[in-house]
Length: 305
Image 1 (cartoon, rainbow, N blue to C red):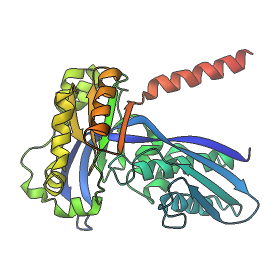
Image 2: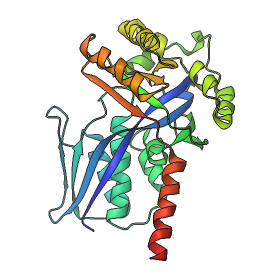
Image 3: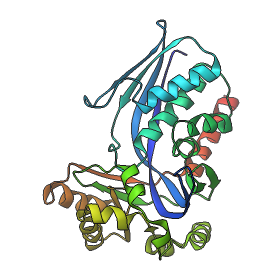
Image 4: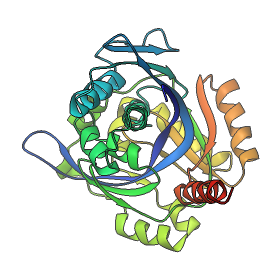
């Protein structure tokens, strides 16, 4: 096999809590992360010419070692002691600098793809260790699903898969620097924290009402002060029928959980046509258990035939 094509799925935060700040400047987090079905397409090819070449469908995205997928490939090839070259093509659908882990997901897909392409047989744990050297969200993007993330985001506890839920993503026509949001956050002044433990139990009980009513992100207060339109988007989502709405990550993307795809699509038209938002997507939660069940069925079919 010389070429592999992968789906690099984005994520939303159902909860995000900051519980402390380390001496090195990193923050200690407790958050529930959820993979969604909006994805970038990553194509990885072996090349006879040594080196790493990057191409993508956005002219302004870097194609050199400033690109996170370049860093992922570089670290993997060094770890595996591989001297062959690779070509990586990225077709972006996930908004950039949006709080949806688009870059981290692309890097994760490159690590997974290279592992398959070169048959290095690194374990998922090993790939996640390499990923952590690239970015805090990369290990989650390798694991995927519904996950409690702690530490700087690298201590991951898988949770039962959520049922498929209809998600609307609406990104204001701005970008937000994650570093600037965390720099402005005053951890000792946070008075209201997400109900993380109760939320975990609600996921286990598949209590959709609790899940949609108790989404909470302590970074909202910081980012909304910088960009008040985020709060308006949240309110508009509720008015258009969302069961719950919240900013994902450090923002600026707002997501809403809707009772039907139709209602999410109607709201999407409003944000695109009336509000002039350029990046609006209707998607759904990624069900890891369902996907793994399909894989088992395919393997069983191949074995029997």
